[in-house]
Length: 150
Image 1: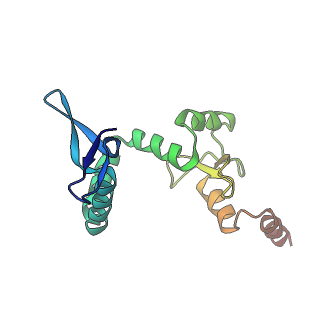
Image 2: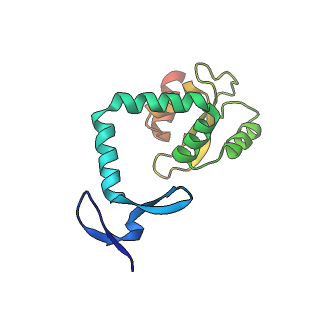
């Protein structure tokens, strides 16, 4: 077992607790452990939110499709290809009202169960917000429909 002492926390740790960098075609172990680097990075971003925000905007503008792919995967657990399959399955229409108009959003919204995280389908922004404001409750949706019918 190889060990190294972190210059930040002064603890001796296994070398797997340190990042490996390549310099001049040689690998070397950095001087601070992964945990200390993560803490410093988090502190820096907390203290300098404007720098973090500008970097995020620049990243999104550089490759919006990559950003969208990663966001969909992270937030809903599906790939962009699975999203496109849902769009085709629904003929590009909202699963509730059937509209193809997504304005002001550029795409159909991904509707999901907040308890299970499972994707239910694609909705226009209005329907997505509507069921969200009714707390995704079938009971409240039925009461709203009864209210409107009377």
